Length: 212
Image 1 (cartoon, one colour):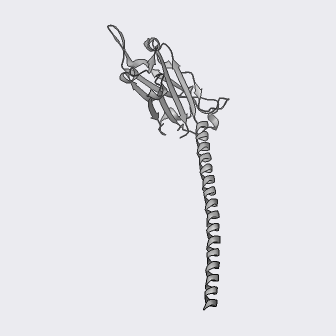
Image 2: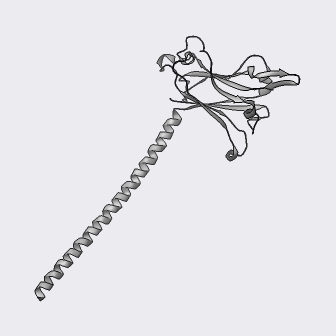
Image 3: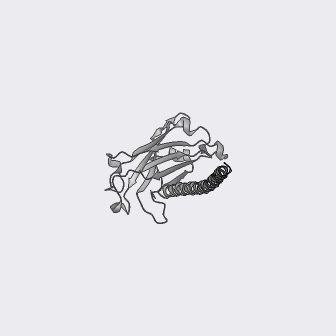
């Protein structure tokens, strides 16, 4: 009986030792899994950061500062921005665009000019790299009327997104100096004169062109 008890104790001791060894291995495995998970999270963060950088590199931001807005809007004709390309590299590359404001939204009254609102048009121009670009133009255009509120947290920009339609002549490869303009945004008078969009007769319009 004593011998059997001794054998049983030995087996229990061996079993306990094996369990301790297994537990140690599980702890090591768990540590490795935790380490792997941390590396995966780090890789995911790097991939997300890279994605944002790539998206940013593929986005062109053009800001149009319009001084003496009311005076310019009271003159004859439309108001044209300077031409700009859709690529952000140092050299001018990509599609060539410009923006114009339809000043026909102003009407004359007995006490001066009254504005109904403004209409923004996007104009696709003949560029130096048209031969190697895909057509028609399909890039997304994000238009922002910037709130000039000094506190960035309190700013409420007026934002709209415009996506070109494939069947429009306005976005085909230009044959002449520029294509037919296409309306991309309308800003009502009520919006324009709310908040701090127009300060010291100066307006800021931002145009963000990104891949389709």
